[in-house]
Image (cartoon, rainbow, N blue to C red; front, side):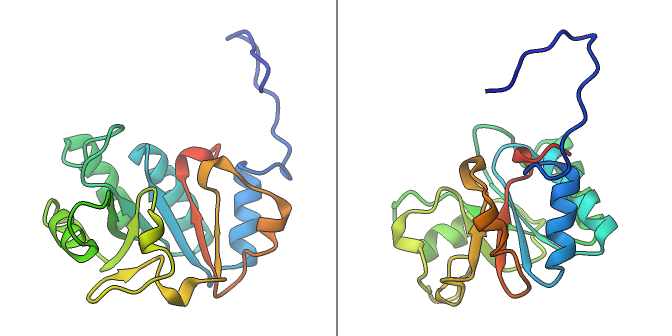
Length: 185
């Protein structure tokens, strides 16, 4: 647990080798510019926009996956639409992060939730808190980030869980899933 500090106290410089720091992320991206960089926007579109701007500087184009409904942001609010537009303006793709909870089929859920917004620039779909049912399986008409082709080539910071073992799996050809709200950008 981090130390509390007085508001007037200057923040201490972050160790550039520490996970979740700006420099650390830049090194990861520089080491695997041709990885499939996937950013799941689970909590904050503002944080996602900051991540998009950082990735733009590196020249890496990523795919950002947005929920159509959620407890942390309304994707239809004016501020959210501005964040999505800024992500796209930085050269990134925006796709659906489907919140599938097992009601109806996977394909029907994807089609229904895709219809809730019109800012998609990729047909690739992510799943929020993916149930086992979607892991490493293919579904007709759904290009899923959890499709069979990604099995064994996937690394994620889900739950803000990161280690050097995970960092060693960040390479070209792998899928690297990060959540912008986890990173101190």
